[in-house]
Length: 366
Image 1 (cartoon, rainbow, N blue to C red):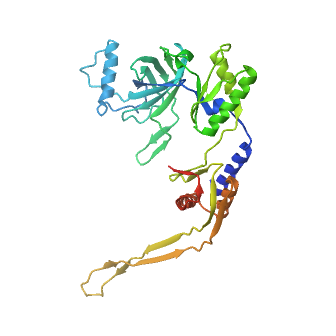
Image 2: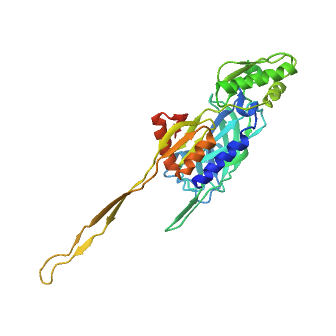
Image 3: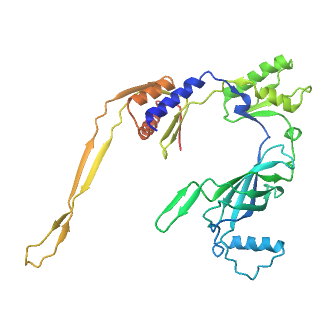
């Protein structure tokens, strides 16, 4: 993707969403209502010779022996050599307010030297929470998007074949204690904390509540949290649902995010640059090796040797001095685009402008 196309996309996104409003439930979460992470250790069966090497992965052999012992099969004195089994770590997110009998998705990741989990089936695996209690059990066929094919002289790999997913693969066995009663005071917590956005959320809620309930129900606690006082005549679920559909125009900080590995540059809407003169040249140094063979004269009993010959040339492009002043995002992007810069050049210029004190924004380099 060229720099011009990236700039065009940025300008189109900004112009199309400049006047768009956002729902409160898209910029804030209910404080205390969150997921819980689960983890478990299990075995995947049915692999086509792509499982763990039991001699190298002793934990796989021990887990397989323990599972067979529980089924009444004694293999303690048998040297297992199967390649159809793989030890895996199973992870899942337990949503809030989920009850026993519900199903959740799980992610399965190999922890041994298995080359692929494609075609495997996860055996019954207990998933524990941070408190050590079992909250769900997982089992089912694994869906793997990647693949790996190997021959004697070449290997082809696409995606990650040692990680997969089971949709609705875990059955919830225990309910997490809590609810709106356990949460205590209801509050909205902003995903991107900002003082102005917290104020806008408070004003929108109070304006609606004044008309709906005849009283103000929101108070900003800080730049992240807006405390809610629920009227007694309405249930918490309906109260949160009504407030979550209210629309605001959240304020965004002046920030530039730079990823030097991929050359990605994301410029916020409120970024401004004071008037500066910028020039960015490129110095090219070319080193050419042209070795020569030196042969001795006939009958001289000399030796043929290779004589090194190196040619070095340097060239620096002449780049005119450009004046850039960004009163808004479109002006800034247009000025940088007119200079014909590559993403790496834009990153270098933004860092230099920030050092000069002319960039009125936060520069985040990843």
